[in-house]
Amino acid sequence: MSNSVSSAHTTARIANHETPALARFRRMAWITLAALYFLIMVGASVRASGAGMGCPDWPTCFGSWIPPTSVEQLPANYQEIYADLGYAETEFNVVKTWTEYLNRLTGVTIGFLILLTAIYSWSLRSYDKAITIAAVAAFFMVGFQGWLGAQVVASNLQPGIITLHMLMALAIVGALLFGLARARRGLMMAESVQGIDPRFNKWLHIVLVLTVLQVTMGTQVREMVDYLNHVQGEERSAWVDALPWFFYVHRSFSAVVLFSNIWLASLLVRSLGLQHTLTRFTLAMLGVIGLSIVSGATLGHLGMPAFVQPLHLVGASLLFGLQFLIWISYRHARETAPAL
Image (cartoon, rainbow, N blue to C red; front, top):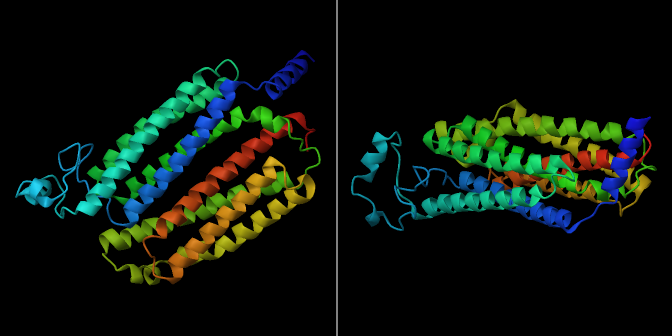
C-alpha cells in the first residue's frame, strides 16, 4: 500500500511540477534536435555528392585547420603525399573540400549545442535524474561520434563504417528524445488517454516493428549502392537495375508501413481527437512517411538523383525519432490513466 501511495505522490508531483528550468531544457533540446537532423541531412548531402573525401585527413583538412581555396596552396606533390598515406586517388576539388569542411564545422556546432543541453539538464537532476543521464550520455556519444568520423576518413569511406556512423547519430537522437520526453512527462500526464482505442497499444508496437524492418532493408540497399558506387564504379543511372531483390521488397514494403500508420492515426483521431499531442505527433509521422515514399519513388524511377538521397535518409531518421517520441509519450500519458 505504501508503495502505491508513494507512486501516486510521485505522479502528482511530476504532473504539477512546471518550472522555468524545465521549459528552458525543453527549448534547448528541441533546438539541438533540429540542428542534429540538419547535420544528418548535411552529412547525407556530402555522401551523395561524393565529397566525403574532400578532406583526406582528420581533424585537419589537407594539413590545415582552414582548408585551401586553390590547388596552388598545396605542395606540388600533394597527390604523392596522400598516396603514401593510403589515398591514391586524392585530387583537390575546392567545392568538395569546402563541402566536407562545412560538414565538420556543423558537427562541431552540434557538439556545443549538446553540451549546452547537458548543462541545462544538470539543474533537473533532483526532479528527474533520467533527464540528466540522457543529456550527459548524448554528450559523451558525440565524442565517440567524432572518433567514428575520423575512422570514416581513415577507412577511405568503407560502407560498414559509414553505416555505424549513421547509427550512432540515431543513437544520439534517441538519447536526446528520451531526455526531452522525460521533460515533457508532466505535460503528457495532463492529457487524458482514458478514452483511447484499446487497439492503439498493439498497433503502436506493430508499426514500430514494421519501421525497424523497413529501415533495416533500407540500410542494406544503401550498403549496396555504396558498393556499386565506390567499388564497381557504376553510373547512377545503372544503380537501380543492378540492385538485388531486397530493393524491390523494400520499395513495396513502404505501402505496408504507410497503411499501418494510417490505421494507427485513425484510431487516435476517432478516440482522442485532432488536438491531442499523440494525434498531432502521429499525423506528423504520416507526413514524414509521405516524404520518404515520394523521395524513394523518385530515387527508384529517376536514376538515383543525388539531391534526393539526403531527403530520403532524413525522412527515415525523422520517422525513427517521431515513433520513438510517440511510444515514450504514450507511456507517460498512461501513468494517470487506467491500464488498458
